[in-house]
Image 1: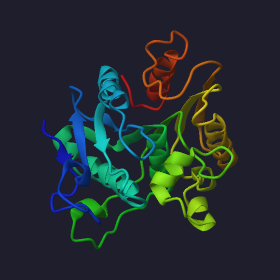
Image 2 (image 1 turned 90 degrees about the vertical axis):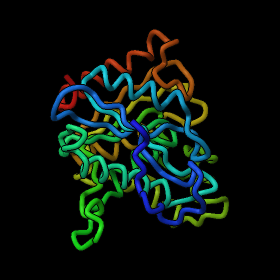
Image 3 (image 1 turned 180 degrees about the vertical axis):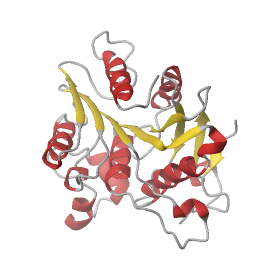
Image 4 (image 1 turned 45 degrees about the vertical axis):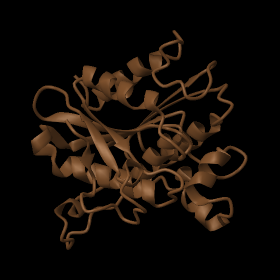
Length: 265
C-alpha cells in the first residue's frame, strides 16, 4: 500500500511539496477484522526519523495481530506545533478510515521512541475531542489515543533531565520558559491520560531515565494505570534491542501488556 497522505491538499504551514513537507502514514495491516491499531513515531531528536524504530516495530506489532502505521512526521527545520499536528491528524485519520482498514476505532494506540516518545506523550496529553463544525470530517474526530507506549522517551524539556537537542529542534534555542513548560509532558498528565507502557535503561546517557520516572510518577498521582520497566544496563536508541538478551525482553513485556489491555492476540 502506498503511504497515506494525511493532508492531500497540503499540511498546515507546509513549506514545500517534498516528502519532508508532506506528513504521511505507512500502513502495515494485520490480517483479520476489527483489529487494534498502533501509530509508530520513530525517534531522531526532532531532526530526523530513525529507520530502525519504524518498520521493524510495525512488523513486530503485526505478529501480535495489531495493524501498524509508521508516521512520517515533520522534523527540523519545522518546529512546534507541526509534529504534534501530524500525530493528531494520524490518529484522526486512522479512526476515520477504521472500517476501510478493518480496525476498531476505539483501540488506537501511539508508540514512540526517544523524541518520538515525546511526540507520543504529547499526543496522549494534548489531544482534543475534534471540531464538530469542521468541513473536514476527519477533523471532527477525537485525536486522543486509547493507549501509549513510550520507549526511552524524552518527556521533560526542563533541565537537568531534558535532551537539549530535541528541545532546540522543537522550539528553537531562544524558547522562553512558558513555551518550554507547556511541552513538558509530565506537567500535562490528567486522569484522562491513556494507560501507558514505558521502558528505559538506567544507563541511558543521552535521555536520562528520569524522563520515564517523571511521567510514571505523574500518571500515578492521577490514578492512570501504567507499566514501567527500567533495565540496569544498555544505552539509548536500542529499538527492538535484539542484540541484548536482557533488554530485548521489553517487547515481550509490552506484548503482554497489550493483551491485558485488549489490543493483542
